[in-house]
Amino acid sequence: MIDYTEKIPNNVDLGRDRVLQRALEHWQPAYMSWWYDMGPTESHNYEVYLRTAITVEPDGWAKFGYVRMPEYRWGIFLQPRNVERTVTFGTHKGDPAWQEVPGEYRSTLRRVIVTQCDTEPASVEQQRMLGMCCPSLYDLRNIFQVNVEEGRHLWAMVYLLHRYFGRDGREEAEALLERRSGDVDNPRILGAFNEPTPDWLAFYMFTFFTDRDGKFQLSALAESGFDPLARTCRFMLTEEAHHMFVGETGVSRILQRTCEVMREHKVEMPGDVRALGVIDLETMQKYLNFHYSVTIDLFGSDASSNAATYYTTGLKGRYDETKIEDDHVLAEEVYPLFEVVGNKIVEKKVPALTALNERLRDDYIHEIQAGVDRWNRVIENAGISFRLRLPHKGFHRAIGNFAGHFISPDGEVLTKEAWQNHERDWLPAPEDHAFVQSLMTGRVVEPGKFANWIAPPIRGINGQPLNFEYVRFN
Ligand code: BYC
Image (cartoon, rainbow, N blue to C red; front, side):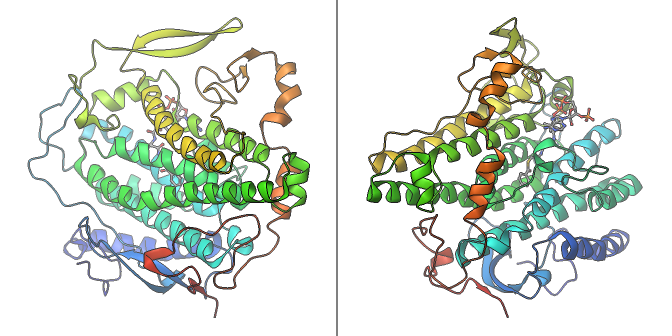
């Protein structure tokens, strides 16, 4: 059990390292100040029915109860150490896993940790206004749960920076509280984390698509030969599952509500559907296209020498590395990539080591497709013929081989003009955003009530009923 009377709850024996403890206690007020400025708007007096980690054991790792959010106990939890763990891939394969940072990999490792870490506060910043237009208390509680846990993930990574990277690490930890999502002068590091999340449909799409990038990246880092990073990421993954659940069920509930209204009123045309106060399926497809394309950019360039270095040096593995049956060195392997030649997309085999970003992206796409299939079953069960589709992986890309090309959702290489002629059919236009936001002008906070554009969930949180008072406003 984690001791919650400590200033910084932890299972890393922080009390034994006074210097580190003081450094983190010094960072804590800066974090709180960031939370007050950039955390959920107007939430400081609310009491929220939240889960808090109390142990890192797989069963019963969290407890539920009301918490005033600024008093949430953001702690540092690592999965317990396995003393026999070895590096499982790359040139150090078979060596004992590192408990300290290997000097020669210090700056590379720091860069990977900072990039991961930067996404956590970014997402809180992106979502900070959404509580003001929530569709129910249940959903409000869920977004707050996601937000406090992203805050905890920031703590998890900042611990690594402070503990293992000395002064540079402390400076990076400060910079993490200074960058701002979407800021022109000091933006967040990765593209998708500078995009606004202006409404709840965007929020659910983000938690379905982008949090799942988090899952895949954390899984790859959980294979790291640097053991403290691996153990940190393992525990973060436990919390991540709920975030993706919020996204998948959120979109699913919107689809269900739209389909119910379409059937009840026998309407199909987007304008008629919108007139009934629900989100048309065509708009859902456009949001999907946007969130999918900006999220697959997060995996980096298709061919990347950085990715090869991360792997060979044992710092970042593949998804489910230890379950893959091959030599875990990949010196001889090849992997297919796609590139645009003239007006065609052609396959090209490259050394598998350089294609590791693409491979992780493909693993991700495979899992995403299964989620989209589940959404389509909601539409199919309502007897409606529309189907959601993942666009071609070259569609609307800003990173990698497809960047600078104009690829249609069907995978056709177009001219810039032809693409622009269709852009409004494929991506949310300002009027689509305006419509979605017009449904979300105020918040629905009566226990058990849900906004007209979304169906209630099947069950409440932690066995509580749907009309439970998930948030008390005081
Ligand atoms: N936007 O060699 P390349 C999550 C940069 S989400 C802007 O292809 P590499 C979460 C790249 O940084 C998971 N820049 O890159 C979700 C590099 O710059 P430097 C986050 C981009 O290194 C929801 C340059 O382009 N975790 O946890 O192979 C809520 C050359 O690129 C982008 C991680 O990403 C982009 N989209 O791969 C909350 C894991 N893509 O360094 C949380 C850690 C690339 O040359 N990060 N660039 O200046 C990594 O493993 C790698 O940095 C990347 C990029 C996979 C992101």
